[in-house]
Length: 460
Image (cartoon, rainbow, N blue to C red; front, side, top):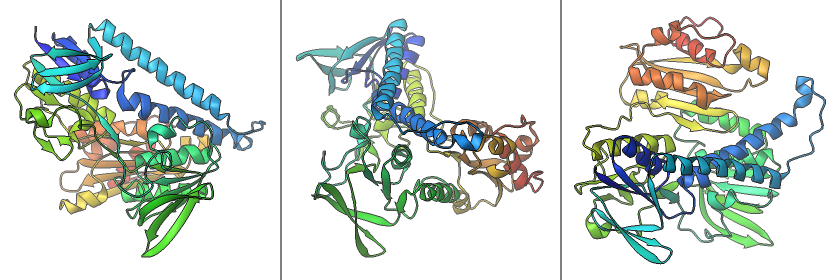
């Protein structure tokens, strides 16, 4: 039985461990944190979604009269919301602990360091343990990126890690970075009473999404009195009169915005320092570990996956990469398929997308057709009072295949998976438009947008 050593128990690592056991390998999983699950479960995806749910309920509670419900909204009990968040995380961490025991994965807690290509030295309670393996899978994850600017140190500027443990709602919050992380925190804290401002260096927030999705979310934020400053380059942060003052340049003009709390949400970077990679000759692409489609590094028997290899820093991609890595480690032949990776932004409204944006498709020289359908014309969205948003479909005019889909609206991160399957399988607009969709449902806008691309939408 082959012995695999896996460094890191985040999404890539713990999934790789379970799959390796399913494939018959003996597995040692090494994790430096006290809890399993990595950043996503402990300091990212899950705690932020728990708080986003609090934000959603708060907004709904403030609007009960619209639905004929007599209730008084007295605000948010932040300690109670944080307690719920912690319970959610603890429950899921226990679930992973159970899965490790159920699958027979040996877990070693301590900081691991590669001392030879197939040898990991682990600091465990001050006593080193040497783990020798037939194959090694590196899954050290990522850390919050920090701008090398004056004042960008905790506690002057917080990262998402500290923000998820904040003990009270700040009166005001400046978020540096308008990507996914920044947008989600803006959604949370504006709903629970903070005055929120976003500073984004690029021309639009959530800049990796289709331009129309970005514009729609920006409009929604501005309606909620969130100040959105784009084309804004931050130069530093200082403390002044008990406040944090952020200096930035916009349209060649020097500006300032002050707040009680400043959050740096400028992305994440591979967590590859201090674990011995340079000493064993591992090839890197700056801070990312270089791999091929099989998740193989340049060192025989050493694989890497998840955030540490760069590219898509997404938990669901890490899950898939972990499965690919261990399949190859035990002798199978498998390659990672990145053709249809869903993107999800859990703001309200949510944003879900897959495949090419309109701009990307045009840049590739494709002749395209665009279909759109707004939620304000979708029966279920109107009935539920969630009318903001739209569905947009990008179709290759020559082949008729759907090459991209972009949704901003209620449950967009769920309903987008119909389009993930369409892009993955090369389904045509006629096939998807011809599918019978339940009425009323939040999937109908996808059907209508697809038919709109074909010029035959019914309810538009």
